[in-house]
Length: 336
Image (cartoon, rainbow, N blue to C red):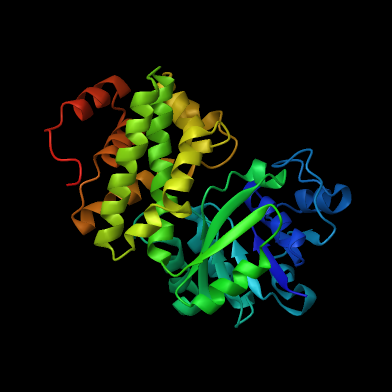
């Protein structure tokens, strides 16, 4: 039986642990708080992040990262579902505990501040694992729907297609359909930038703008994501797929999306501090918008929506001013 260690018992880590258990894996779910791990083991519910959802018996929770890796004779996959900006520090503590042949899987959708590195690059930096041992999972992954076993599809990507197929088999259930891809760069960029665009769409909704505006933001957001991806060697087809358009539409449209909700609060007039105070979980785009913009500048890629979100979120630019600036940009052909 395949054993998987999932590091991060937030809503997405817990939901994906359910997928793995339903696919026949035994799962050890790590979280930093012993009391939450005890509650999960005692009640079979994660009361903090997925209240009301019964967890499979094949999931066991722990607050000991070594136990997560060693349970059931060592993990075949080590899955990371922590906030992206904490990954490096956490992995530095965990690296020596991880089985040397485990496939390291990122569920995170962010770009590291300071380095502008993708999550797979952070994993490689800290663990020394080669790209053939590092995989990512991306797509429309609204955790609550997946935890309720509603139908969903995603992409598992690894430079080594054989490894991608192994991960695909480990998380394939009647309600969760994973596809394989070897374009790790494109899948990670799609997942990271969509959070920024979801902030923009949420801001538009909070301002009372209509569906034309939101549809335009989603489409132009996909265009600037694709420009960045092509500059970094990604496959253009990835952005038309689940890790690109699929994830973008779901995150920009759903009230279950933390980034969309965060943006809506900003558009309604909340300050950054106020929006953070009412958001229970991490909205990755809030921090990653700065690192995405830095990455774009390093690549010489123009990303006006990302730049606008950074201005609103981190520099206090009023949304109405930002909108006026966007709409007054020089006219140009669509595909340039």
